[in-house]
Image (cartoon, rainbow, N blue to C red; front, side, top):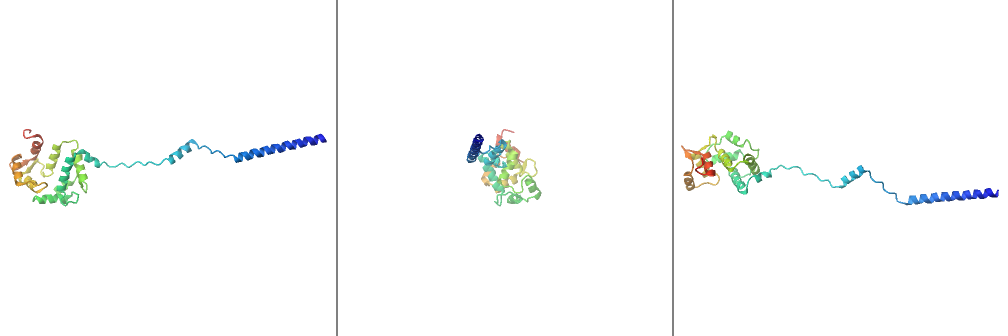
Length: 214
């Protein structure tokens, strides 16, 4: 009996010891901080994208301002003077009323059809930027001789390359930088006028190439 009791006592002590060790181990595990689970690669990438500030691409702007690069400062100033000359009511917009006013200045009746034809390629409100763009699109890649031809053509209703002598004189004395009588007299000595008609195409050639170049 004594032997059995001794064995039983040893088993109980061993069992208590094992229970104690398990309990201590469990307590240690509970006390230790639990390591955070590493995010999955895909999830980590998504978090990184969210963390980065979103860079919004700027909307494409129309290159309206680029038209100024087609001309030098002197040319832009000339276009500005021409625009101001046409903009009779000084509202910053060229319309049919402005063109009609120019005709009235030189004592001519403005045909609405002619005015409409002159403005048909223009936007509803032709401001200076649009005005310059219109010329830029037409003249880009061409020389200033073409620009002069186009300028004269605005007043050549019959599109024959000629203007009536008196009509041209009225333009010079009533529109834009007005010529004096003395200036016109001097100018008339150089103009290619035949039968009361000014050959403005020939005049442009003389202006750009000299009198000997036909």
